[in-house]
Amino acid sequence: MKKDSLVKKIFMECPLCDKIHEIEERKRIATTIIKGEVVDYEENYYFCQYSDEDENEFTVGRMEDRNLLNARNEYRRCHGLLTSDEIIEIRESYGLSQADFARLLGWGEATISRYESKAIQDDAYDNMLRIVKNDPLKAFELFQKNSDKFNNVKKVEIRERIIANLDMYGREYLKRQALESEYISFKGLSDANGNQELNIDKVESIIGYFAKRVNNLYKVKLMKMLWYSDALNYKFTGKSMTGLVYLHDAMGALPIGHYRIVDLENVNVEEEEGYEYTKYRFVPKENDDLSCLSAEDLEILDKVASKFKNFSAKDIVSYMHEERAYKETVDGEVIPYSLAGEIRTI
Ligand SMILES: [Zn+2]
Image: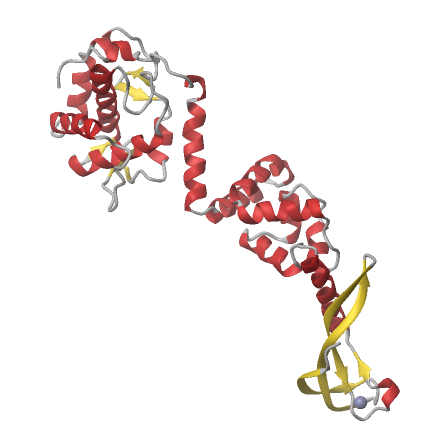
């Protein structure tokens, strides 16, 4: 066992002498039994040099708690469990109170409070805490599952905190999933997606590419330009470029999930308050990743960009209204690529 060492000297009321005098705070390695196992841990205590040999040590409540915590944390370390400090750290990373964090995890309200102060968590609880520590998306899933445990104000608050806690990858993943989920019924190759599964990397890269080449690129025009790129690619290769599925809309072709596309993490968009509605202006990014676009893709995108760069939104809508693909479909209907491939030459 390690020898005692001095932590500091303080003046305090000594309960052994009933006088105020200098006391030494010391520490040493002590031994205790936890769950039937011998555990060595660091123990702090006060030492009175005026008292007789048999009774010259004492502790106070807070020190006692700390010693117990040290012993339990030592047990946790030996068993690969999170320590109470690590549990506090995880909870605080989400900015949650002990009770709210417990609710989020679907546990009893007092559970986290006990784990942070005295009780030792079992393996299942420990695993759950580690999952939430490493994966904020998992925390988001749990929040959705247990959201009925919070009132509406709390719900908004906690949702925002978790979202804020998601790192770049997490946010991106969520937004991609939101778009993917709109395409679940279009899995597999078909005339609706132009024999191509949705490729979100390409959608993002194409938008960045157009934003660099077209000034004042707003949403209506961009959506048409995406359609023309896909249609042209289909015409040349029998496959669409992005796998986007377009619906017949009053303003021309509109891809399913267009709100999700605007919201993608790698799409640079500025919102402008218009007279009646918000306008979305697509702006170039500093570092464009074009690695997923082939030379053939870029050739088609250049064609589409030079054809339409000086078109107003109204011009491109009117232009599209003359396409067979538009004339032979009705409002809300999927525009099949077999028709899209018959576009006029660009
Ligand atoms: Zn004393």
